[in-house]
Length: 179
Image: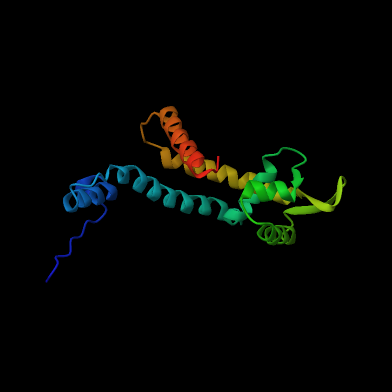
């Protein structure tokens, strides 16, 4: 039995790839409500684009995504840009072993320093260095510019979209026990 190959391209006549995907499933499984694909498939595709854009913005300043995540966790605290390892583990959603490796790497690059915690000599506090501050500040500027460009020329109700996305995210986080 032969099957014809159909080239859907980028979805031209359908609007986008998701429209083509949904049309195919509606044709093949008309009894199935595939309307959720119209939302989640677009979110998935947008997330992949966003991941690439973010990685590119960070790379402009010599940072990997995970390096930016650790440095920005420190930067967002305000001067003196210092916190415990435990706080960084919690904020970055990684294991202690992973965080130790990340901190070793960042210390080796001169972006953070470690200090004995005056309240608990078994613990260390982590502090952003001037180099780390310079890199994370430059990277966030590039990130904001890139993400703004992604929205340029699109006429949408940003406040309404933000509210709907917040609702979607908080509902899912609660359902998964993450929020």
